[in-house]
Length: 65
Picture 1: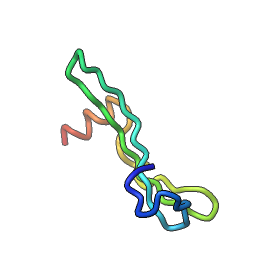
Picture 2: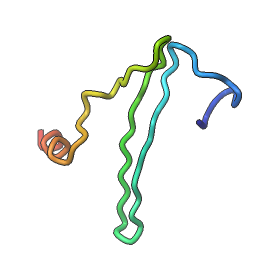
Picture 3: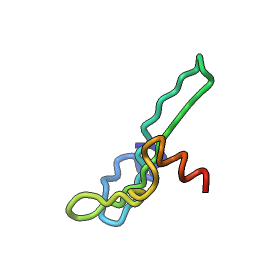
């Protein structure tokens, strides 16, 4: 994790974190990163961005609106 006020801090219920997987293709001058926001709960986590498009077709449809 980065950007923590205290690097040794543990995740606590109510905190929100970002998961940022990405792929970068410098030879094609292309980078794609899909960020998810997760809220930490007592029993795990809740994906706050679950309704955003994931697949190419969903993304293209969403951008066409």
